[in-house]
Image 1 (tube, rainbow, N blue to C red):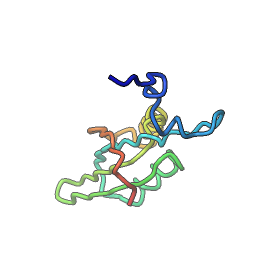
Image 2: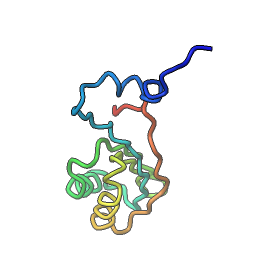
Image 3: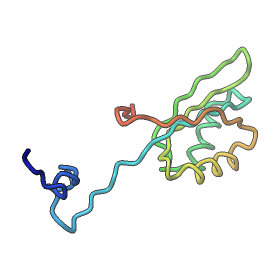
Length: 111
């Protein structure tokens, strides 16, 4: 039975091929917040969110329900910025209701 070098086998190939001392940053994990706002003033809602979140948000998806006078907004932010983003959203839109926060997979890209 051939012997294997356990030290070499335990190191993932990607890390083994990187030069020593060089660190690569992991891609950020993105999440999507769903918010419901009792208003159909989309421009005002987006302006408030943009002012509060600035560059934290990657994308806004807006759906307006005129029948129920409600706007649903989906905002994508890095998971590391989740707490700051939620705080900023609560200050900008205190009447907004948070729905699900979904972790987006590696295969998800911003549109």
